[in-house]
Length: 399
Image (cartoon, rainbow, N blue to C red):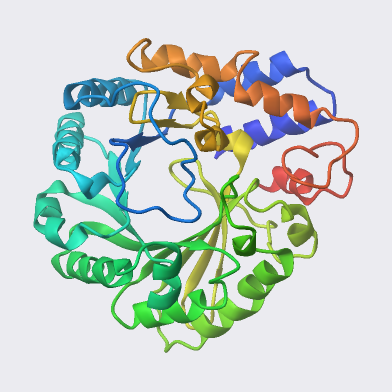
C-alpha cells in the first residue's frame, strides 16, 4: 500500500510541477517491482472474436519453445514476479499449457512461498482437458462467456456457449482451481443481459465473475462500443437490482475491471459518483479497488487498472518473446516496435529497466500529463494536477 500511495503522490507532484519527468521516473523506478506477468504461450486460436485485442495477423519471430519459456519464467521469478497468467492466444489449443503449468507448480513448491498462476480460456477445449488440469493446483481459471447463448455465440463462435458452459461446470465440479471465474467482456450488445446471465450462472453454482469493459481497437464494430449512459444504467441500476434480488445470504463476488482507455468518460462517472473512489484499497499484488456489499451479502468490486500504475508492475510476453508494457500496441501490426525488447535477446532485468527510460511508454505518458489544458478524453492520469476538480487527484491522499 505504501508503494502505491507513493506512486500516486509522485504523479500528483509531477502534475503540479513540483518534480520533473526524470524525478518522476526515478521515483517510480526506486519502489516499483515486477509483480505480474501475462504469457502468450502460443499464437493460435480457434475463434475470431469481433473485439479481439490482438490486432496483428502474424508473429514477427517464431514462437518460443518450451525450454525457452521455462528460462523466461525462471528469469521473471528471479526478478520478483508473483502472478502468472497463461492468456493467449488460446492456451488449451495444444498440449504445451500442461508443461508450463507443471513447471510453475514445481517452482512454487521449490520456492516455499505463494506463487499465483492460472489461465484464461475461451472454454472450447476445457471439458476435454479438465482431467489434465486437476493436478496443477491452479489458483484460478477464467472462462470467457459474454452472456446467454444467443448473445455470446453471436460475437464469439457458434456453439461456443454450450461447450464453454459444459467445461466450466465440470471444472467447478472437479475443483480444478481455487476459484473458477466467468469472464465477460461488457459491451453495448450485452450490458442489459449480463446481470440476468450472472444470476442464472450463480444458480448453477458459479460464484466468481469478472467483467471487463470492451477494449476498443481499430477493428471493433462501432455498435458494440458502450456509452456512458449505458454503463451508468448497468452499474447503478441493472446489476445491483438483479444481484440484490438473490436470496440471503449470497456469496456471489463480481469484479468489474475499469481501464482508462476502455472507458474514456471515466472522469464524468467519478464526478457523478457513479464510480465511488472515496474508499480505495490495495490488494497483495498492488491492484487498486473499491467495493460495495449489497444487503444480501453479494459483493461488487471495482478494480482500477490505472495505466501509470500497471506499467511498472506488469508485463506481457508475446508468443515470440516480445516484452510489452503498452497493451494498446498489441493491436498494431508492428507491435514488436512498441516493445521494450525480446526475452531471447535480453534478460528480463534489462528489459524491465527500459520501462523507466526516456523512450518508454511511461515517459510518453508523463509527457501527456504535462499538457497545460486538461483533455476531456481520456481522463486519467492525463489531467492530474491540471484540473482542480479532479476526483482522482483528491483521492490520491486517501489510499
